[in-house]
Amino acid sequence: MATRRSARQTAGWLAGRSLANLERVSARIAAGLRSRPRLSLAAICLLVAGLALGWLPTSEPESTPRSVVLNLPATSADQAMAEVAIPEVVPVPADDSPVSLPEPVPVTEAVSPDWTVVEVQPGQTMERIFREVGLGPGLLHRVVHLDDRTRGLARIRPGDQFAFDIDPDSGFRALRAELDEESWLFVEQGPEGLSSRVEPRTLDRRIVEASGVISSSLFNAAKGAGLSDNMTMRLANIFGWDIDFALDIRTGDRFALVFEEIWREGEYLRDGPILAARFTNQGETFEAIRFDAGNGPDYFAPDGRPMRKAFLRAPLNFTRVTSNFNPRRFHPITRQVRPHNGTDYGAPTGTPVWAAGDGRVIRSAYNNVNGHYIFVQHGNNVVTRYLHLSRRDVRQGDRVRQGQTIGAVGMTGLATGPHLHYEFLVNGVHRNPRTVDLPDAEPLPADLMDSFLSAGRPLLARLDRVEPTTGVMLARRQNGSCEGDSPDC
Image 1 (cartoon, rainbow, N blue to C red):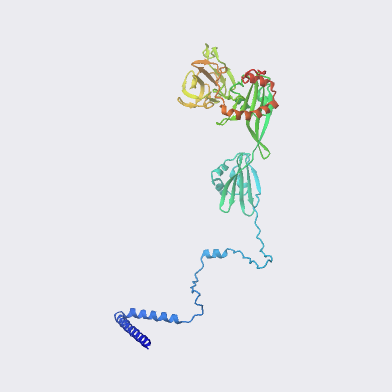
Image 2: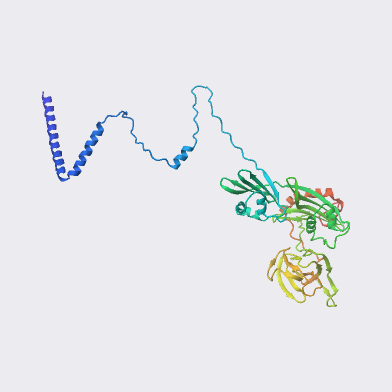
């Protein structure tokens, strides 16, 4: 009984407390309504609306979240996404029955070019060629100015070939031109416009041999052996330090060489380098092997000595020797006996004159006797002089390299015709340029000899197949390659 009474007392106390609190809240609301009637009225309306929304019935389960859907206008991106084909998802059956797959879409193969080949004729221009195949000058302008590689298409020569791939419906598709011996240049029309690319071409290098015996001249014998004039000059240049091909060639001299021919797609293009050569002049035989010692290919004797000497025997391509070295020559102009301390090489005016060796120009001037002249100081107290030039291409103090053009043949000063007067001085003493012993260049270093000999043996063996070996062995012994007590020495 006491417990029930106590609970009733507690409940009564709580009820009284709640009423007291309600009275205080009501008093405050009333005071607020009196002080700010509009704001208070709005608050009451919002409170009543919220209670009313909470009492409205709903058909959705309480666990389902509510969401608001806004229908916005479609954008261009949405339309593009709508146009994308979504692949069909093939359901996989629960059992092991076969799945029926959709038919595969066929892949369009690349169209093979249909080339129309045009060969440039004399007088034709690239614009005319484009017009004849149905292409306009605007396309030609875009092609030529596409990049650095295509700029060269504006410079054409008779015999050049161009191939065009033109579709009857879509028009220009591709152009093919020869960039160089080893490359095609393609200009192609793609989805993003014109583009160019380079495609390599395969070259075939064939090694061949040739030989001949001189009966009238080197050029006639070489032509009979099937050699071009250019190849004949290259052969002469290899042995030009040891043989004077204008004066020393005799009937019965013979030669043999192994060289490359460059072919492409079954068509002969040109001669390649001489790989090995042999020349017998007045019973003395010389051999040369092409080898790269690290500074570019050059020619060496079988013992590793370079064929290139420190000085050229003759510093130009001359027609004939018009006057030899003669200490007691009768001068044709002064009519006096006076030394002719050099060699006169007759050649047309303008023929290039080369530096006989590396050195420094110590004089480059003009006077009434020498005309235009150049003096070059070399090592080992050697000086070379070049007189009666039509022009001078170097000045005093310039450094020159062997074979560099320093002037041109003329007939300035005391001269009766176009020629080069060439002098060779050792320690201030004139020597005969045609007979003076020319110092050798540096031989191959010892660490390269094994590689050189390995490369040279098969080439010399090929020379032996087209040229007798007896005279060659004797010449090798004369050149000092036979040592010791060998029975062949």
